Image (tube, rainbow, N blue to C red; front, side, top):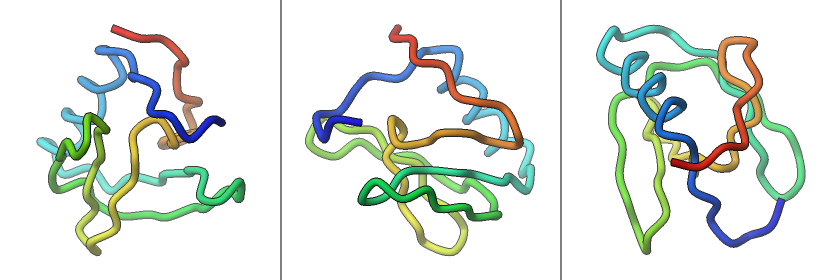
Length: 81
């Protein structure tokens, strides 16, 4: 995946927000330096920095949204708003 931020689909963003609001413990697989990392935690917030969107986990981990490969066993869509 390129380092340039790729906008995620509105539907995917809405799903992430729903998981945060409902406080669903989520299993998230994401790319970091071309390695797949797996973490299980609660999504507590979102932020935008330098036109890139991130989710923030309860443990403090920040994950760029376009680096998410899978969440709760569902592959992420490669669609834009």
